[in-house]
Length: 118
Image 1 (cartoon, rainbow, N blue to C red):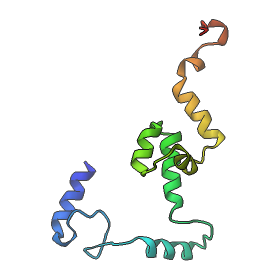
Image 2: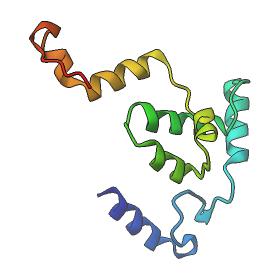
Image 3: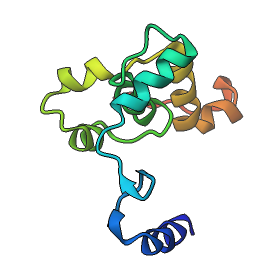
Image 4: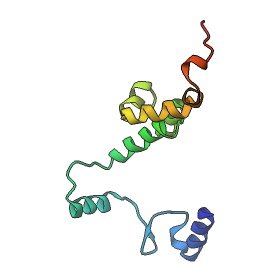
């Protein structure tokens, strides 16, 4: 398991405690400098570090099907409006979600399905 391998590596270098990201056996305190160097080397101009947070929350909401309340708790959002500001739902996300949560609709024709009215 990957976590077991990580723990074994951490035991080899005692100065890093339980850190995942290290450089030269020392914990990395911030990834901002590495991020900015990478942007400079790749000549990317329209990417912010915070964009990764938007991407993660969008993937949780669209592809993973994680409930909104769980996403809000993990992200530290206190309102639905705040959470919705982070979700960049696109047409393909909606199509994927509908396919994932309505498998019967894809295997039967509409004529063969019984309908219920409430």
